[in-house]
Length: 49
Image 1 (cartoon, rainbow, N blue to C red):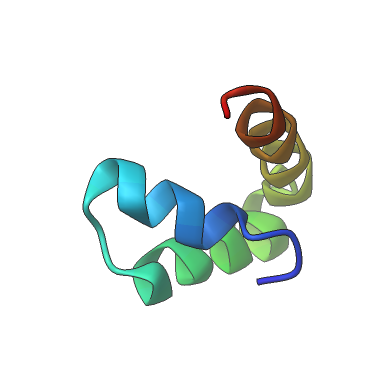
Image 2: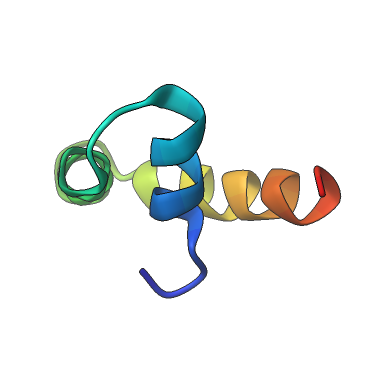
């Protein structure tokens, strides 16, 4: 939502944006790895254009 990662990833995977956002939220609160994964995917998104 902030950097466009969820929308970009939903286009790549064919999943709904809401499911991906929910997965990021769960991984942030439950596992603590969601923020790092989100930033890594943002970097990948920036260089994959």
